[in-house]
Length: 457
Image (spheres, rainbow, N blue to C red):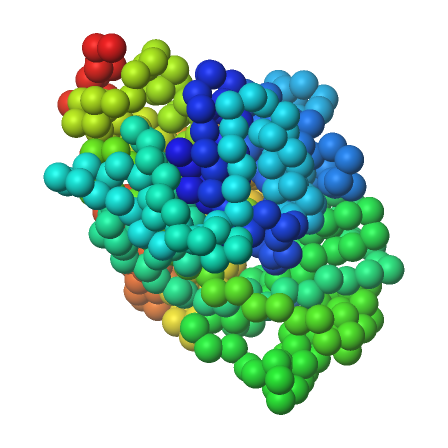
């Protein structure tokens, strides 16, 4: 059984009987989950779901444009070694979800039902299924040997299966711009604004999504007009001139949406009979658009683990075997999670001199081109999910920043700010890595669960 999971297709392909209980089967209307990185598209291909980005007016995304103080640099995805179709995709999230649901519904052995899961059914420490309320208000129970919980970022079930430590560093304010063109076609745009980044990317052939990051958990009120005033007076002047009129027009239309940005390291409590996935299990700042890539990668890992198993009823053995899932997912998930958290802190404005230098150094490092550009973009896109490569590039940016401070003539002030820059960089990335798990992230082969054989049927 899959609770609120938007892609049971992988399990259905292996002949499983799957009962999907979705809170709402109508088309979702969200301001996130609209950008799929090339690494995520490759996972769609592995799952046989690549046609789900067709017939929804999805737009090819070939890289990013980074803008700061009137300067800009284009960062292209390193796609030379892949088929022509491989690229990022951006779209209306709801259209993509409906395509995946439709694809799953074409397979036998699926029961797709609208209902709200209210609790997990537990017996002697084993999850046996769920209790849920149907669309017409009936209270029912559903039983299965494996319950996959994917009830999203607002999960009310995760506390049974993990130790959640949710951080809300900021909120996104979402708008849709019409009748305008981005400075770099087929690219996402990141504006390094004050106090934090602003994102633009196409979601259809006529619409551009704008996401304004607002630090903290409180945003100006939409109802009393404070938000519109903030967007016009504080945000609009920092945008490229070719986007300002469309941005102001979108503000005046009033269709302004907000969404808290959550971050939560994966901290599972292996529980017989159940598995936690998606945003209910692990979240990262959505700045880099890596959430769907992590989710699809997790689905591939889980599918491959379950493939040799025909009988899922030995809950204790299955749980011990599936502990390897939490380690096997780490290279992709931890790289994308760490990069998202670190980039958000580096890209946000700060009064601290060392942080200012780090932000400037990051922009200039990426502007150098070559491996200084392709390496970080390969990490961001999910094409090269290697944690060590991430750490090397992150500290290369810091060292590059120190070099800028000391050349051509070193000074005591330069040495002091440079030392603080290295300290600041360490203070950004090491806590994130610690939360992700150093051993699983960098030395997964040393984790015993990786070598556990499948339970005997």
